[in-house]
Every structure is written in structure tokens, then in C-alpha cells.
Length: 157
Image (cartoon, rainbow, N blue to C red):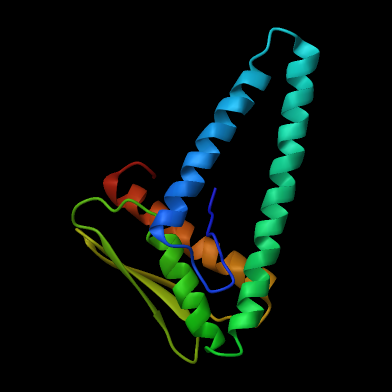
């Protein structure tokens, strides 16, 4: 799951991310206790509630990201915002030795350049100024980073 946490001022600090991870770990332990019950009806109910809660959280995150794109576009260019968002998502990927990436933007669009031991790969897109679709494009480009790493390392065909 791809996740970027947004505050009104911008992307969360590392300390905020660590606090969120600790809170999530506590919540996950509670969920495991509820789902792993001996009573199947209670466990099934816990799973259904968990799925509904996750759907609400994901929808809320998507809405916050879209609002973030619209609000920041008043101060930064839209492409700069998408570049920063793509860079934040790519920074969460563990890069093996010999791999590196760079995110660039210009008036035409946003691009991700991936340096691998076997060469360079690039992928980009031209934003359409609609947060829903541009956010999907950013996530797709970030997924391309992981897929390129896996392909080069021989995990994907």
C-alpha cells in the first residue's frame, strides 16, 4: 500500500512518521486479537469491520492528497507539487546497491529517472490538472521504480 501522510503545512516529519508507526503497531495487535478469536462469528465480524474502516481511511487519504494538490497549486506550480509527491513516495522504496533515482519536472510534465547497474530507465507523464488522475499517475510511476528494480534483479520476467 502506498501512503503519504499530509499535514496542512506539508509532508510529515520523520518523528511524526515514527509516532504513527507505533500507533499503528498497537492497533494491529488489537486487530490480530479480534480476528484470531475462536468464535468464528466474532472473528468474521471483526474482519468486516476492519475492511470497512480501511476503505474509509484510504478514501480519506485520497481526498486529503487531492485537496493538498489543489491548495498547494496556488503557491507552487502544479508540476512541482507532483514532483515533490513522487519524490516522497519513491524515498520510501529501499534501493539496493547500484540503484538510484531522480525525479524531474518541467512545464511538460514529471519524470522519474532510474539508474541501475545495467543502465538508465525513465518514465514520465503529462499532468492533466485533475488531482484524481494525476495522483494515480504518480503512484503508477512509483510502482514502476519497484518493478524496474525487481526486473533488473531478475525477480520479474
